[in-house]
Length: 151
Image (cartoon, rainbow, N blue to C red):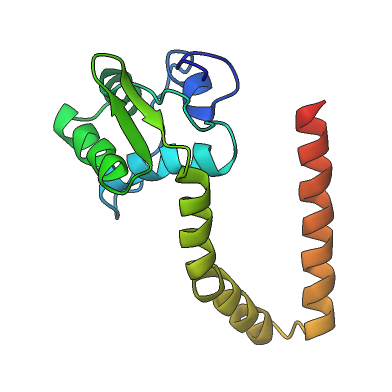
């Protein structure tokens, strides 16, 4: 178990080190964006099972929002079994969280991303082979970036 504050977390790296607040989407509830930021770090492997997540006060300072807003986002993480509470210590990533998040995200992946992508490609006159080639290039770029990030 790694306590909050070790290096390697996107939120951790940004909290306390960035003079600017993150850009929040005004069209979506802020508490959901805070929840999704933590979930994104879990999915990316930046917050591992049993890692401590940033405290509510750290998230309040980082996002520059009302404590109630942060509490709502963190409470959702707790309700959904993404984090668990250790009394007096804070919130920690539940060991089942990565699998739960992957399952949830896979369920919406095709409808939210693949369908609109293929429709847009068709509108632009991009045929199936060209779209596959684009995806292959993007995949190779992502793998290359992943390897470089771990070196």
